Length: 311
Image (cartoon, rainbow, N blue to C red; front, top):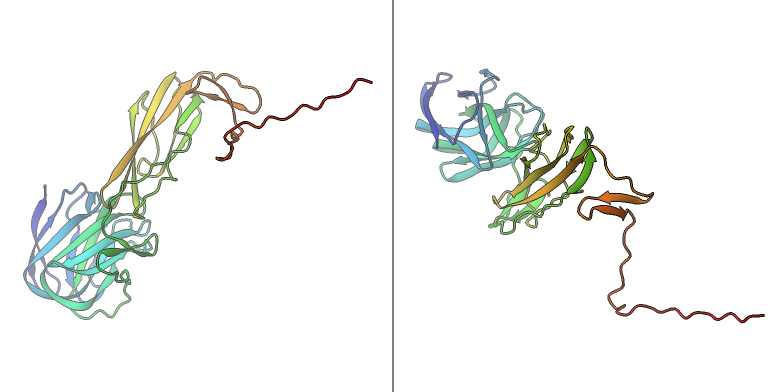
C-alpha cells in the first residue's frame, strides 16, 4: 500500500509536487521546501515515518529542476544515525549515513547537479531500530556553499559500502544470520531480573543485523528494547514457563529465529558448591568445563599399579 498527497513549494517559486511513499505510520506530512541556503523552518512534531529496511519516499515535481543536493532533518536526528540512498530518476546520486548529531537540517551534496523531476529517498533504518523518520526535506536549486556530509566511497560493481565494517561487501546476500543466545535456557525465581542476550549473533555475509523479540508463551511480562540484541524484564510472581523468540534479519531480508526458554519457579533446588541446577537435565551439574580427549586418543590410557612390598 502507498500513501499519496499533493503539495506545493512557495519558497523561491511555486512548484507542485506529488509525494508518494510506502505505508506511513506517524504524523504526516512533514515539511518540504525549495531553498537556496538555510532559509525555511519545519515543524518537528510532524514527520514521515515507516518501519522496515528499504522503505522509500518519492517526490515528483511538475517541472524539471536542477538540484545540487538536498537537506534532510531526521526526526530525533541527534540521537541516532540513519542509513539511506538518494535517487534522481533511476540514477543513484548519494549513498550515506546521517551524523547522529543534529535534529535540524543536514546537507547532502551531489557530485554533479542533476536535472530531474523525481527524487527518491530509500531508507535502511537507524542505529537504534528499523524506523525511518524524516521531519523535513529541502531541495537545493543553486550551488551548495554550506558544509556538507560526505557520501560513502564508491565500490566496484556488485558490491556496496558497509558502514559498520568500513569496507565494500558483496551485493548478493545468500546466507541467513547465525543466532547465538547466551543462556537460552534458564531457571529463575519469582521477581528475579532477567537478561536474555543475543548480541553474539553474526551474519556470514558481513551485513548489518536487525533484531526483533516476541514473547510466544507464558505469563505476559514487560520486556525492554524488543528491537535490540538484548532484552531485560522482571520474572513474574507465578510459576510459569516463558518463551521469547528472537528473529534476526540481515540487509538481504534473510532471517533466522531461535527461542529462549525461561522457567520461573518459587524455589530453585539447592545444589552443592560448584554446581548449578539444569532445567533440561532436572539435576545439578558442574559449572566446570568438561575435559575433552585428543582426536588421536582413541583408547583410554591405563595406568599401571605400583606394587608395594610388605616389610
